Length: 183
Image (tube, rainbow, N blue to C red; front, top):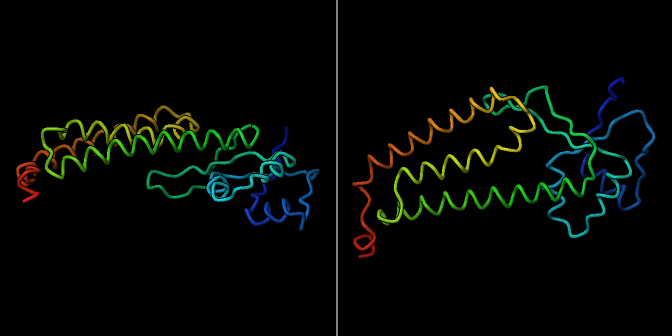
């Protein structure tokens, strides 16, 4: 089966179609695509009628692949068709999970830096940091499906986490205990 050319649906064009100002033709020999950026935009709108437009066009979600320096490459990952509203729900769940993980890390770091040295340790902060970054990238790494990239990423996160732990351990003596910091 020949690959169809891809057309990225601009958010404004989707809105115009939804509002009836234009009608995007659905029987063209193209594959309409959208991205997480559409979901970020949709989260600001109360009306999610965009899903109906994406369904009608059988648009598929696309994800750009970044290089080791987090720069865009000429490669991407095209998901199989799935109902866009289901994809949006998964997107929101992922955000919720990653926000919780981020919160746990930042709270632990803040508690430590504010002088509550007995509540958490540099080792625990390192663990939270690594979990946060791995969870943050988990769905992307799964989409790519390359175990080598996954293991390289985890190795880099581990190295950075150990460096963070060492810095916190080194400077722990410079952090005033909470009782002294409040005076």
